[in-house]
Image: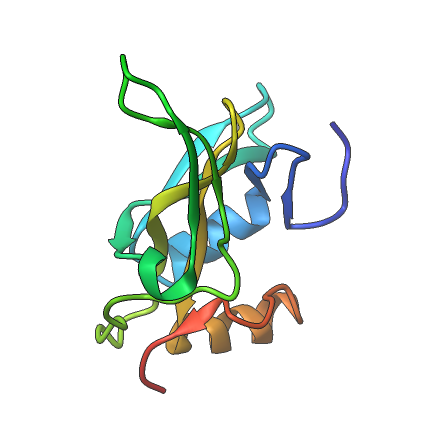
Amino acid sequence: MRTKRDLFSTYDSRTIVSNRFKAFCEAKEVKGTCFFPLNPKGTLYLFTATDILEFDSERRGTRFVDKCGTCEKFKSVVGATPAYLKELPTDPHPTFYRSDLEFGSGREKNPLLFVNASLAKLLEQEFGNVLHQGDVFGPD
């Protein structure tokens, strides 16, 4: 896998980051990060957030389709954006968050990723416009 980008998503919504992005997070002591190496050179990482925000599926109108009687999970979870959270983060320290719900179909379900305002500013300074509207929550 070759790329010059520092942050991107795969077709199944996995977040991949560069070594530069990982180093940035470590240098800025960004909270809520977890990196899994994807290649022997250590140039690409699977990224996930560890801090969880509760998604308000009722307010958003999220649909849960085909619940499995064995595992109690749904075949599809549809209706992620715009995101509605039950509570906004209050920690001013730069932090990544993930939704408690995973969205998608079959085995290709993943949580939404969010950042607080302090991390959004740092990301924009270092990487430019990598965030989408609705990715940033919390006090300035």
